[in-house]
Length: 288
Image 1 (spheres, one colour):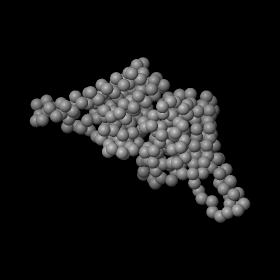
Image 2 (spheres, helix red, strand yellow):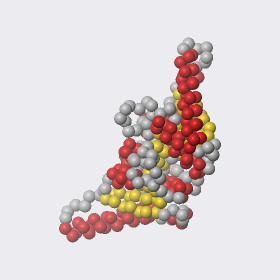
Image 3 (cartoon, rainbow, N blue to C red):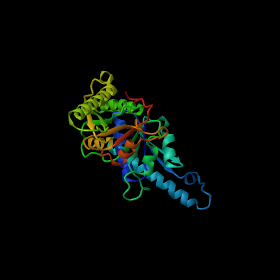
Image 4 (cartoon, helix red, strand yellow):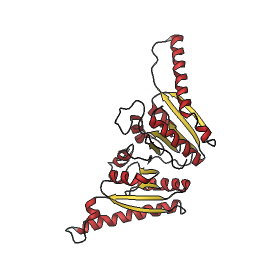
């Protein structure tokens, strides 16, 4: 089951469109969820100001109906169901995602401030869910046939690689594995060039070792390896402009223990040019 959160915004409907197509690829069901305050969800009909609660529930049903219609327009063959939840949108979606293959949200919603690149719900669930979280932003006008995965040698990065291989296989897409490094080389002359080349060789080995063994498991996936000296955010942001999907681990090697979301993932949630997947370290793709 794929879970998608909606709030009546355009971004939420784009998330529904992406999620139903993904459900069709996986041959699974789509569950569309909307969250309203608990007091409105639970307010009895005879309570004071019951009309306010009734108005909010009617609005919620309208939001879900619109989302269901969008899903059926995109793919009428996918089984779609709706779910109305009480409470905080972030906590409600995280709890409901406990049995989901992936959780899908829009990049920003009705509650976001004008000009903000990422909504509080998208940021609040990314890195916290037990399943991969897809933040739908920058939908390409046409398919590029490429999935990009950021590789850094971390445990969360391993899970991202596994998810990306499975997703590329599912889509019949090329997988671009990108590793960016930025260690400085001190000094100049031939010695500095030699040191720089040795460091680059080490980074290429890191990428090759991270990918090792997966081509045997996914023989249908063509892999392009890309190693660049540069900031990971800049390199991956550029790669995302030609991708249908960007896959990252929730935390990288340089992030502090205890953080749910690493600095690279956090930055790209704001700036990626295509839908972005954030995988938890324990992810095992259920469609592999």
